[in-house]
Image (cartoon, rainbow over all chains, first blue to last red; front, top):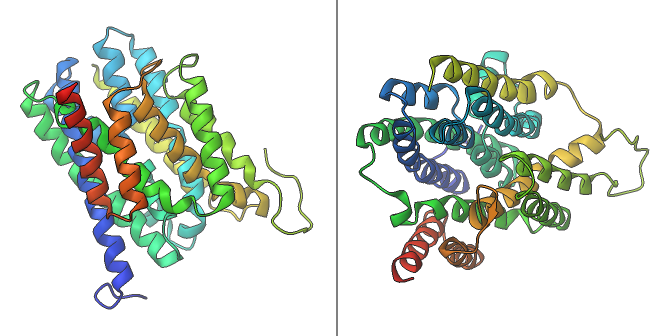
Length: 233
Length: 100
């Protein structure tokens, strides 16, 4: 067990995770504004953030409804985007496997792009778990607080004026950078980026991100000749 | 916006998370699968960066975001802390937007 006040590295992980949570959470103002503009009530907007709690799905549902799309189309697009959290859950599972079921059921709700990526950027299992929890929990708190702020603000603020739409990719660049030291990870990242860009004009929104996961097949060849069943599908 | 849609989406989103983390992820997986799983963040994070930087809906767009994210990439390379990278990315994007 590591105590945070003794471990300088852990303190850095916790600080960085909380900053990321705040930065992502602020973006929920944009969601709150968008949801109310699309005709959702303030309670509906807040319940979406509390229950669905996966930004891309929430934005998709609101933008489909707002542009006059059907409930089915809104559900389909948002559900497809939410499917990637299953993949993130798989990625986190090896580190959380020893925990009791109720704890993992709570962890499941915090399984997101950011908590998984922040966790993956750490060097050892204790720091991975800390990064996952702190990032996930701080996003949950800030995301819901700022959803309420946005819903109450209504349409008086434009996130684009402040460059807030670039805050997401900027944060992800900072997260991706350390992962690229590994050559296989760099190749997987390059494949993911290209697949996403190429598919964007032709597939429903959200699908390119899912398809980008083919990049992980870089991991199929074993690093050393071992008795390896080709079990990857 | 209906309550039915909100509740159905909430249940679906949580179900996906539980399927990955608890149902499938609960058992030990073959080594080849584990090797692939460790690459998920790299592949998906790269894809999300590309999506948020170069696309709007179905269109590929080169705009102020690209400049901001490029500045953020330089900052990350220079080991600027995360908060600084985010600030630089947002500030440069806002600046380019304001003067263009």
